[in-house]
Amino acid sequence: MNTLKTILSGFSLLCCLLVSAQKQDSPAELPYSNKIELRDQALEALFQAQVHISLEMAPGFHLEGEIRNKTDHGGSVVSLLIQVESHPGGMLSISRYSDPKGHIHYTGHLMKLHEPEGLMLVEKDQHYYFIETQQRFLVAE
Image 1 (cartoon, rainbow, N blue to C red):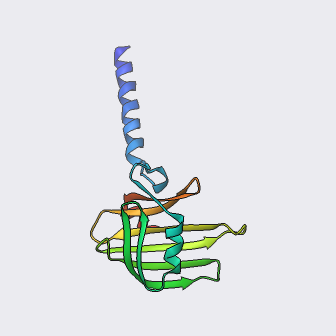
Image 2: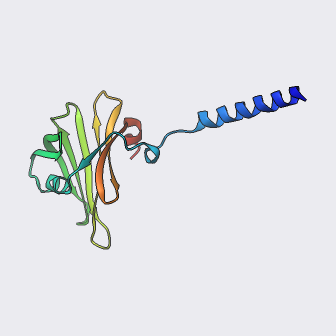
């Protein structure tokens, strides 16, 4: 009887290990512990800038850079590509779009050259945050 219990326990443990090894993290499951809350006015100011940007996006988070590309996708969506000088090797890709009800939303990410971590812009409870995440998740966006 003990041998049967041992075999079943070992088999259960092996199944648990196989299932947990196959599970991959996704950006939606990432913790919000390393987050930076951004000011809505600062996000909008990015889209009003002409070429050079120098903004305090959040307390202790200064963004300085240059707009490399600005694309208008039919009036309701505008995308920016910003070379970020305050984070060497950083590129900020950000878009602003309005939904059918007229609410404005932002989406984007900040990737840094030669670093495993980047920042993803997320909306939670009508506030915007940069959360630190692995860049492999950002490339798939």
